[in-house]
Length: 478
Image (cartoon, rainbow, N blue to C red; front, side):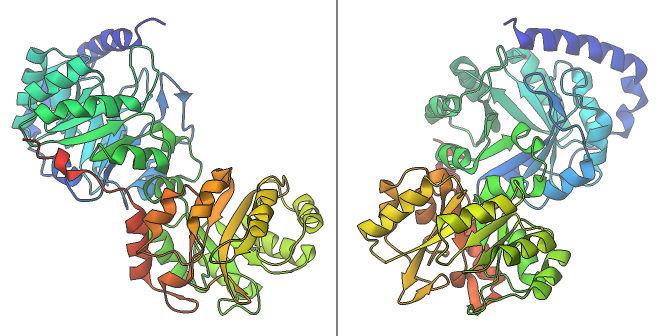
């Protein structure tokens, strides 16, 4: 493949010349004032930071988000972002400075102008559109060019994300005392990606003597990717992975906090608070014996007020009753928590919309028996069952017991992508639960102040405990 980066940079130099002709520097330079927002400070907080990107297209993926609604994007990004990145390259990313201006006028976070900076004019232009930081790529600039643009950026109080992609560039970034170092896992010369790029280059920072934060960029798609790289970085820049998602808000929460279901929702206030804390799914229980039982009418009141991905929990119900609930509430998944057999699941599966997942719960003893694990493996291989929820059984009660079974048995099971882990999970052990690799973690009684009444503080603390914590020693090497 031809060197993509060389072509982009050549086109960028021509674009800058033409843009300066239509909007001369002397027409706006006297209006510029220094930025008052610090991307460096925002990324220096305890939890791993996220720079979320507004990206319509890219050379590697083409058009990513045809419906590029910045209001929708900002609504999803701003509750959780440390910073927001806006692409302004038009030819290859379909970005515009109008997008940058729109975002900087509305976001409370510092905004990064993402482009191929090759000339001082672009630095001035970034600040003209109220950016708070710019991207300088060492694959594009030599040290003299970098220092010239960095000095100008400093005069406007613009932070600099210094991007590197190999050992030579990392060594230069250290010598240049770059404060925000971004390791790009994408090779811009051939567009391939490899998360190991970050892991390979980080050890070089032991030679750094200045204060910095380290960001990993490109190829970060899942919460598992975040957890993997949080061991060696302070934060992440994520664009394409999110921009391709139809439910952007849920995708943001899933990336940061993992796929987490808060079950036993009984009122709209709890549903809204659970979502705000990072929950990606909400559970409504339609089993009459449960203290968290919801009627169809009461569930409708919640669903109509809070839009979310809802899972309906049923115990030994009928296909017709379940379908009525699915249709009325637009459930995303059905969770069977009784004695349903394969024949029932097959009948239900045939009646369900294809987009609705079917889960089967299995109640395990605190020390699961061989027979129980055999049943779990059978369900894992059952094509009528999309996911298998594992919960702890105490006496005759299954679910909502606040007790956990021996999670080490998960190591004997295959298909982690089908496992939903439930039972006794809270702030004290959710990180341990996540380490076993289930696709979804289900929390309920341990985030309640009373059965059916969720405690927003407990939910927040539990979800925060699952969020990646950055390695702070990286900030102050030497």
